[in-house]
Length: 182
Image (tube, rainbow, N blue to C red; front, side, top):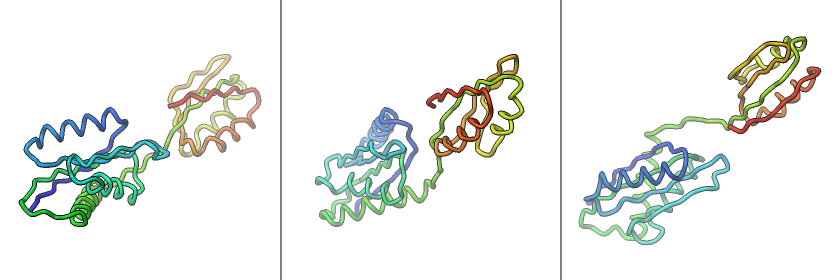
């Protein structure tokens, strides 16, 4: 009977994902197959998969299918197969890789992350109270601030709050906003 080992890990980019694949291929060099799939980015448009010698579409595709079923991104799933002497056939392979990926993803758990943005807010000392009332709101983190004749605050908050935060800040007289990509 074949033995399947599955691993789900967070990744930041394709370079890190490729390094993880190399690490598992080296660690499990005696396995028959080290198959994998990854999904990256907030729009979930960057992805890759690999069947690593299994029949086309029987390993990487079901692994990626599980990533999609969970609605995840910035994740890689690696499934290592030690061949046990019994051929599983196409349906059996698909089911085995799908189940291994599902179990790895369930065991790994989820961490919800939000895409962030930063604003540099420049304002006069006279308007500092109004600015501070806005930027001390929920979900806004003050990264840096200074108070002098001209003041500034660097704030960070979830991207989906941009319209709300900039709308509230624009009601304060005499400020200048500069968005800084994170």
